[in-house]
Length: 129
Image (cartoon, rainbow, N blue to C red; front, side):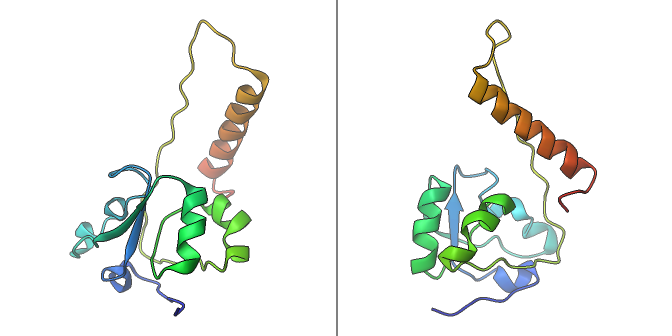
């Protein structure tokens, strides 16, 4: 298996891609803006529903995939994955948290929401850039 080194999306246009999550979601290469650069959006060769499954598939196949940076930093290096330092502008995604107004969140759910909010505020001011 060869290690792919790329700095531009154009270098990845003919790579074998893995779709993580739903089509059109943040794990879909169509979201990276290949077309806005005058490139054809790459074909998806594998589809995967979860990041844990992605970790199981990527080390054994020649594919490129998208995963959250924190998830990669925690698991990617020990699984033999390589982060590609793409210089093209990449899209920012929105994550929404929805909860019922008439029911309090459980303690674990509230902690998760607090962590999402904390990370979003840091990222908004460039702390995670």
